[in-house]
Image (cartoon, rainbow, N blue to C red; front, top):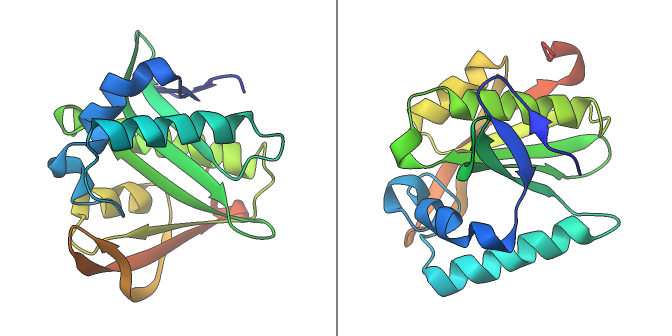
Length: 177
């Protein structure tokens, strides 16, 4: 797949050589406190990265887990995911390394992923499930036009406890492009 270009970000396929950058994000408690998984150690990050590369090579890939970089630097600063979840629907997820928070990278990367989902994939509806305390991520989806749908109780088990999620969605005709 060719890289997807936003204003502040470029989303490209992960490579096994991205391990150190990926581990710096997926192994950082400041990031994973908001994710549906606990922080990875090096072995788990290597396993996860290898699985992403394998899935990307499948003819009918189950998801699009992409590395987020800046246009002027190929180092991974985050990741974004669009996962088809049924007929015409997909789930959106994203994470930006804590050292890069507050610069608009998550909003830009999510906007790029939505363009890909609604355009290339022909998706009608995209959802995002976000922890209630993750105010920054909630602000991202609201900025992109998502609508709050409801509260999912004990939705994910992470960091040793069950966590609720807030469900947001965006429909194709609501997408600003």
